[in-house]
Amino acid sequence: MYYGVAVVNVYVSGFSRWIKDPANAKLTFADFLKSQAPYETETELREYLTERGITVISTKITETAGIVERENVKNEAYEVQEQALSWRDRKHTVLKEHEAAQINLLRQDVAAQRRSVFVTADVKLRKAISASGLANLRDSLISPQNLIQLVDLLIGIDVPPASLARLLWSVKMADDKATIKDYLIRRALPHYDAALLLKLGEVLDSYAERIVKDAELENIKLTPAAFEERLATSRFMDRVETEVFSNLATEANKVKQAMKDVGLN
Image (cartoon, rainbow, N blue to C red; front, top):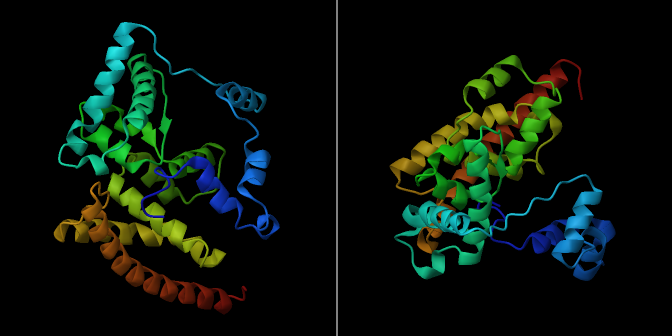
């Protein structure tokens, strides 16, 4: 849950979630594909998405200049991020090529002053962009959670004025802090009731800041690339989780008691 599903096949990851529904418990992966992904070719996928109102844009580049630019984007983004890694820990070339084609389109939109965003759960990609000469695109890459929050904001969800002000004035949230907070929220959602979840984001803000500072002091990389770094990060997060959720349990009891005091269940 901490590293995200960017390295897991999207259909396998979707099936792992789908099969948890008791109604689907006895169904197979083939049943899942037939139900949720009834297509076998890119052409069929394009038709499937078009029927649902989603416009499909080709990222294929034919002119020589465009191909060269795509290769430059691919190499530039990961040059700093992966220079000290072994081949085992580096991202596959085909994935980099797909990303480079999308980043190339994003860069063209930014140059034309069109407001485009690239939605990705891949923390390694966001880190690579931030560390390269493409850092001006950093704020155009957002996580799926950020996209959902943006939609909630635009359709008029009821949020406290202070939280809205913080959102508007703090758009450039640090990647590490955002990663920590998103992870803790995903871990907390199945275990805490609505009362605590109402203020969960506010509670976790302070934890996220402290965790990032503690990680820096202990020389822990919160978005590690190498296998050995992931082991150290996992041990660090195990320790952090125990402390955070112990404190959240205390907060939950306080909220429940406060609701009882005013006659709410």
